[in-house]
Amino acid sequence: MTNHRIQGLVAATHTPFHADGSLNLSVVEKQAAHLQNTGVSHAFIGGTTGECSSLMLEERRALAVRWFEVTRDSALKVIVHVGSNCLADSRILTAQAQELGAVAVSAFAPCYFKPNSVATLVDSMAQIASAAPELPFYYYEIPTMTGIALSPSEFLAQAANRIPNLAGIKFTSSNLMEYQLCRNSHDGGFDIPFGFDEMMLGALALGATGAVGSSFNFAAPIYNRLITAHQRGDLVAARDEQMRSVRTIQKLAARGYMGAAKTVMKMLGVDVGPPRLPTVALDSNQTDALRSELEAMGFFEWVKP
View 1: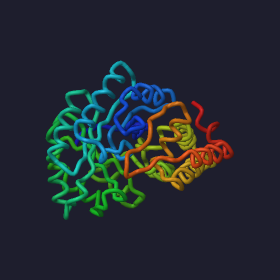
View 2 (view 1 turned 180 degrees about the vertical axis):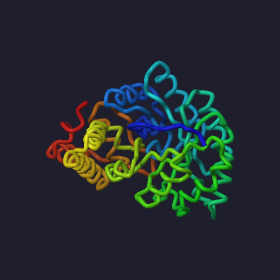
View 3 (view 1 turned 45 degrees about the vertical axis):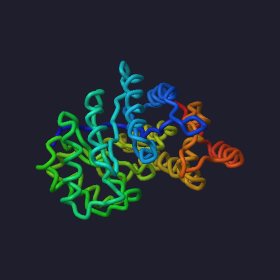
View 4 (view 1 turned 30 degrees about the vertical axis):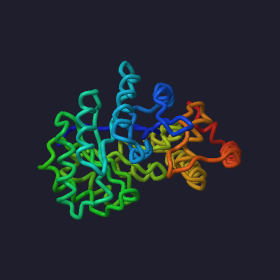
């Protein structure tokens, strides 16, 4: 296992598109600047929020190249998501990430033909990780999207001696019992950044030091205040910030989270375009209603850098 540790906020970034659905890589520079301006330390590119399953392999490769071009001389670090239903594609993306200078890679499990056991999951992740043996590798646990119900703590138990560059798990699950088991696996030797934004305070109470989230794209100041309040022992303030997170995500999820989140990015001056089908964009009436509701609850004040 590696001693890599993620600290602070990692934004799971959107992939920017033109109105016709083609890649709009010119926006990446503005995305990166926005993240740095709002206190985000890492970008997690090409993941679920990045609509990776709606991208062609060459689009994913082009996206990675662009992110490293715009962050080359900046403090923003880049983690590349390389998961795919095709392990050969995952290996191509992993090798590219190492060549480009990523600080880590991460992969969710193939989820059309699913691994039927933890041993098969380990075999699959080992194939991917071995394509970049110098890079920390994070298994991406996200059962709501993959439909895989295998134990992540058992994955760590079996993978520790099989994947030399295994750093830990990007833990996007609400199962805080498993989260604790993962954090305590191998005497706490693995890094387990948390991925459920609306439950971050619970993970902080259990020892989380890093988090990967989609809402960090547009609401990072909320979470930075939450972390600071927790560190100083001010649970009242921390709970208030967590509730702001919950209320924001609730408003977006009610309209289709991906389309609504991309709409909020445009409201904040970073137009990442629409999502790709089968995910749909908000229409003008939905956009107006969302803006009104966000203004009424104070969202645009909450997220000022």
